[in-house]
Image 1 (cartoon, rainbow, N blue to C red):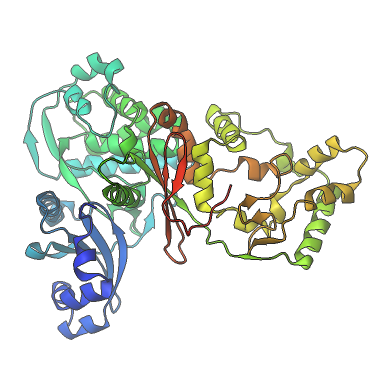
Image 2: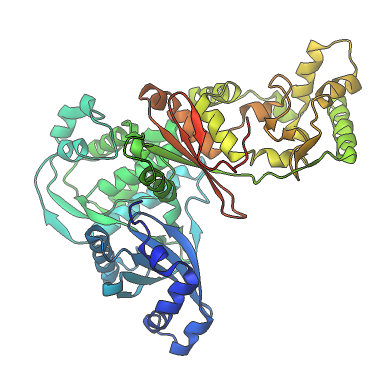
Length: 501
């Protein structure tokens, strides 16, 4: 495995890391040296250049970045980050730098309190969020170092490793007509959840990670692509409002407004490379770990998807739970249709595609759900397997001679002897024991965020015969289950992990 966590290997645990560097960190934080003994350090995240921790000393909170001191690339990223955070004019854009131990590869900054923009992002807040993010990137690009350069946008995008070769061929004449006059230090690892709205109504990049010299408008492309992943049908509106926010901070530009909007749209719509289709830094680190363990003659995964995981333990079906479920199934049939059930379903092509994929899952989607072991199914106990009036009404149409109790009994015939502890009564050792024709519409059509990402890229991954790695992680015990999905079959790397179908 490539050394993605020098700190993790050198100090093993946050406690050992704190034991080694606690006094230095306390001194940087301008805290009494003796107070480091009461300090608390917890893992916050990691990527291929550093590990981050959250450090608390009394009532003060800090973020600690531990870079790989032996890596020239990691060292350069740290130097740029320290340099940008030292800019007084950029203090409102980034957390306040507390200090750095350059020889040890350690950087300390203040934790920014506020609400993540990702938490408040919805269809209703999308456009205002776009304008706020556009304004942040416009303002930030005006205070960071810049340098003169030459070339066109075609040069930059042709060599952008995050997209497959030829992704921009259709727009080459337009891109060749857009010159790049200068570059600025830009954020090149955009995550919407890294941006915080403070109590003072300021947007701050609360978790900065990687900066490099790129064209001035590059930040708009990165944040546009991040938003487009969540709202693929709103790309024109995303581009328009990003640029409106940008122009509020950059009244003059080398490019016309319409050209910037078109550039963002092109970037958002271009097909990404499979290597960049995963779920962020954590999935990428698992991908590297998996590939490093493969022998020289064994195929390597090109993309990783991270999903939730239900640590399933089986228990005997409780007869009282069965009685409650049967009564509920009868009651549901006895009440009129709910208003929400009479409304028309969403007719967007994307929603239809996802619904059809959920009802007829591909091998890849089935493998993802199997590695997850039914994280969403666990709520089926208290929600009575998600059955609604419309589900049971459809079943009654197929069995007109049966009363409400008879319809309920058809479903209950498929109860297993044991089910997932605290989970749905039909959540058996190898998945749902109900045939798809008897499952609720919710169970047949629901897709979690990880499943949606797989469905959106399923066809291209299969067409390109891309080997995929699936990772399932439970918050309770931080267990992982690694799955290598080839083009024909799947193999479970962790043979102790539960398997569902």
